[in-house]
Length: 194
Image (tube, rainbow, N blue to C red; front, side, top):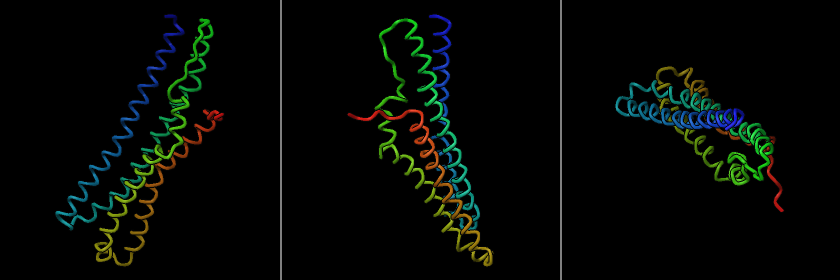
């Protein structure tokens, strides 16, 4: 194997490892959010005097949504890098070796691109949006009576603020989906079907 081939393989391995690690992290954010939210709801159910703990759920949902979106966008960018810049280097290597071979990275394959723009792919993002929103919204609804008793003048404003945070949390994964789709349309255009 030549030095160029070794560098190419090392770059591929490093980027794939980074993608796999970021996918693991992205999914862990949701697991951590679910565990912390479940704990907050559990404490509230056992002892309603801890109602203030439920106010952390919308904030955590918002942070989880931001982290999820950020990580998901990076995963998409790494995939695009593999499909565009890495594939160009791979094509040069194939050309230099006079090989009659055409390789395409799976991230940029026609199958993957069609799947990416399908409704089934969007379902993952929409279900995460719904999960983040409803867990946040329900916690805010449960807290509202306690807020009204303890701070009657501020309760409506606080509930409105936390509902806005809940909505923001739900929008974050959708922003990641929109960003990734926009980049795929620019960098990896679908071929027209005949």
